[in-house]
Image (cartoon, rainbow, N blue to C red; front, top):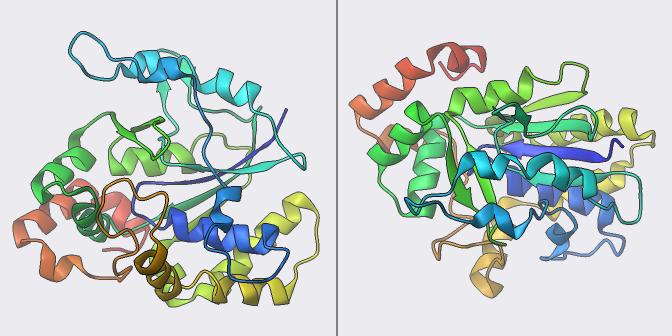
Length: 275
């Protein structure tokens, strides 16, 4: 029954970049730049019932949770025994219903990003305001977002999202990747990711594929692609591959906003060496 390798993260934390890297390594058989190679790593399509609204015109998280495990149980893997699945959902348990479990999961690749920079990236993409975004990641037990195919994903506070994927399912192989390390040392981080996967999936690492994947998943190349032909997964109308830089928050957020995030997530940020 194990069939899913989760590529999980909070939104705007490097999930799409990692998907391009992995898709180029495993699925780009022509070894040519393919702007659509990411289509090989998509999310799970849940039942249409998941999008029904309650009387307050808000998505009912408890209704949504009913469809998580059945969707994974019914998920069909094509051309192999496992599939990489993109995901922003927190690994929550709501009314006794888990988002996922070790029965259906093979491994977890979790990408984490400094929440201060994540807020800046989210601000430019979602078109919200800083204070609203900061409130959500600091205080909302869970809230919903839509992806480009209309599916609903349930987020939690930033720290709980991180802990839900790192601490739950203790017997599951996991690799934790900091977005900042992916920026500064792409080759080593991606090689370690492929090494992690090779031990689980039992294959020999291919250095040429690693080099090719890095070259053809370059942030500047993806940004140029978006400028020229667009990016199908962009649902906001704003630039998706905008800057991808580290430390943007220093000039974008106020001292009060930075302090709010630092105090709220002090333990996790120290653990991740953001403080």
